[in-house]
Length: 224
Image: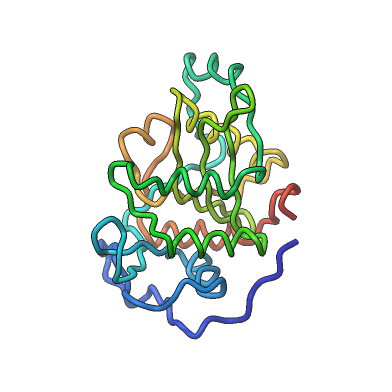
């Protein structure tokens, strides 16, 4: 089981953030301790410059996009697609991260500094990848941070149709293995696409309540 890092010197007190304000702070660093603290209170990093560049911003969306266990919607076509892929966990974390950070992607925001930070998080056991493979070729996946019963999704990619959706189905199945209803998938912002998969929105205060409950749950056995 990964070991919680020492306290960070940075302050992530969300009680001072006005309702409806997504950006909660600027600065700090991307050390493991800082990232760990941020996720446990409901914040995450993303630069506010062009394509995620400096300065470094810290975000806690209000409302927040979440996927509760049991809410995942698997369409008939997606169910058929599942048979065409193999889902693996943590066998190609860096490849998934770099694919998500591909500078050719529209709306890219993952900088080299973010890549380095999440590679460190993976090395110490807090960041993980769910990968979609087809004939031994990585064709999709997602990565995020797992602490207790929280999985904070950061980004996903696909090279063939439905590959990222299959990774989400795989993640949901992994988290649901022990039927612990406290588990929670954080997707940051709800989009129309994610809504078709069962993602909903909650106010930040409600997210923080759900987060506190999720953090009381154990890590999935695979990562513990």
